[in-house]
Length: 77
Image (cartoon, rainbow, N blue to C red; front, side, top):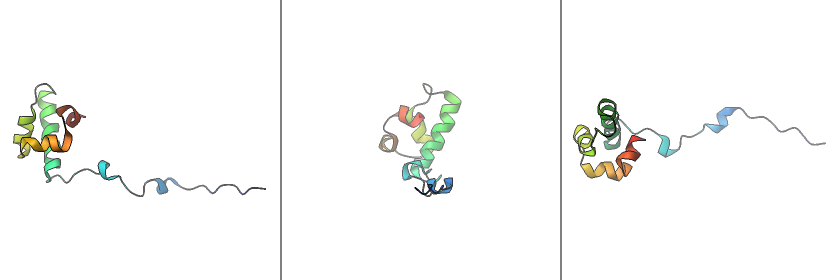
């Protein structure tokens, strides 16, 4: 006769957060870009927000948006 499988609680599923799901530090360039994008997308919508305006508000070089996110659409998601 087989032994019944021991049940484990859900805590074993949440031992580590994958790095890509860990939010960036708010003062990091990536964190500032996300905060600026959130604010501008909320105020102006997707079409009314430029990557240049996000970069200005986040105080980063425009190329950093493309480095971290690739496209404005990917940043929006």
